[in-house]
Length: 319
Image 1: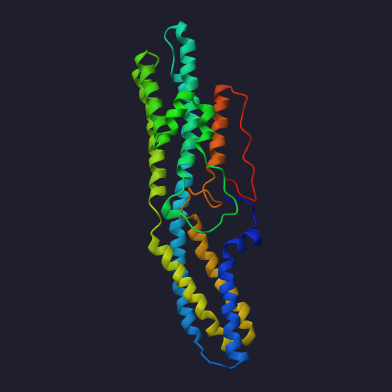
Image 2 (image 1 turned 90 degrees about the vertical axis):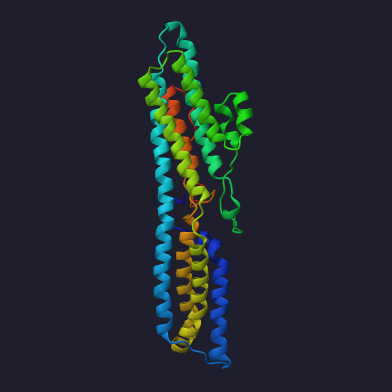
């Protein structure tokens, strides 16, 4: 997520330079052929571009609103993960109670395993969601990408669990299954009553729901008709602009055409860049920062002093 108040020109040009080159070359060429060399006098009426601009504005607004809805839903889901993670840490510690004081050390070991395994689940879910899908890959080089590896979970799992975890097709779901097995074991040992077992299991189900909602967004791409059509319409609009203004304002048609085309290009890119909120790029949900927040909260629940360092912003981006 980009957090700087101002979007630097370096960032803007990084993602728009190809379009700006095309707009500039086109507008200069039209001006030279029309006014300087007098080779043609093709002129489009202003009402033509007005109608196209109005239709394009409505279309881009609709597309961007729907793209932002996907981004905001993803952010809400991860907000729920933060809340339920705090509840998980609290309830594992206060609801799993040994009837026999001699079993206190064994219960403490179980609680530690379940709390720290949840930290592994959160980091694993982040890595799982950021895996590149074929339909989301682009040729665009990103300004900043973060390392995305399951090794971030190794310190929270036993060596045996980690070896099996790395071989799973859906590692986060595997960790949820392990949590369920430990809950069942605690219930069978009498450390959880029927009511307490049900309450803790409800939170575990919520983690399953959260992962499912994230996967739905990740695995359902934004309708490509919108993305493709908006790029085509922006290209057509930019290609017609110089022919509208060259007759009216002469040489000034060059900067005016480029500026107006640049505005519509940016509007198109805004929607395109946020339509996939779980990608490893600057417009994505800051899942690493939120994972570290959850890790910090759970370690404080446990009393662990080895807290992770806050995620620093790199080039104005927090991932």
